[in-house]
Image (tube, rainbow, N blue to C red; front, side, top):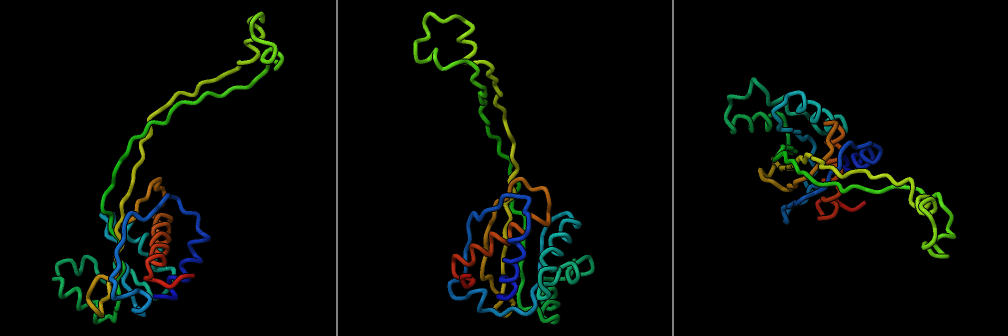
Amino acid sequence: MKKYFISLILILSLSNCGSNTSIVNSWRDPKTTVAEEHFKKVLVVVLVKDEASRRIAENRIAASNPVFKTSYQYLNETTRQLTQEQKLKILQDENFDGVVTMRLVSKEKETTYVPGTYTGMYYGGFDGIYTGMYGYGFGNWYGMYSPVFYDPGYYQETTYYMVETNIFSLKQNKLIWTGTTKSDYVTDVGQTVDAIMQAVVKEMRKDGSLPPK
């Protein structure tokens, strides 16, 4: 797991993320760090209603390192009716020792007002300013302030996606890290997943879950 996050940093630093993503809040188990777990096989679970988006997101993470496996290979329509205990046994039988989950917590819209702006160029001479404007005709005044254009203000609606990322230890059967990210200007699922993981790794380095660079 430690090697994965180090390699992930290099991958993300080269990616052109299509969204602005930041950590809203996070928590870590004070008795356990992700680096100490030494995960060898980790299930990636992205909980979204759209199956295509789920597969894109899971494939994006799984492709970065062989330690990660997509959940749709193990938890799908054939296992939907199984109990939690039965699903957990499947993972144990497959020798999974960790799970990373992502789920969309909320989708919020925010409307903000962008004020208008004035733009223009000065075409007249500066002599009129220093010698006094009085006594000068309209042509001189117009030369100072024309042309001036006004770009009217407008209302802008931005959609924010709140995503929760969890890391579980199956060996200890407990949550060891969780964080919520806020993303806007989302245009590409894969790039947004990159941005979320980048924010998560940065926060985990900050709180000691992962060693510093």
